[in-house]
Length: 100
Image (cartoon, rainbow, N blue to C red; front, side, top):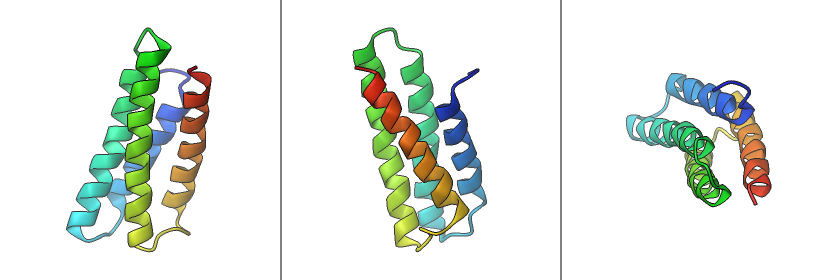
C-alpha cells in the first residue's frame, strides 16, 4: 500500500510488538491486536464508501485501544512501542475524522 502512512505505522508497531519480551499471554494478545490494526486499515482503505471505510477504521481503533491496555498493564507507557502506538492513534483518529 503505497503512500498510506497510517498503515506503515501499524506495520511498524506490529514488528516492534513481536520483539517485546512479555509474558506469553500478553504478547499473544498484543500481537493479535496489532495485527488486527494493520488488517482493518488495509481492508478499510480498499472500500469504496466512506461509511464502509469508517467501520473498518473504527475496528482498527478498538484494536489500538487493546494494545494500549496491554502496554499499560505491562507498565510500558514510556517505551518506544508506546510512542509509535500513540503516533499511530493520532493518524488513525485523523483518518476517521476525514472519512465523513
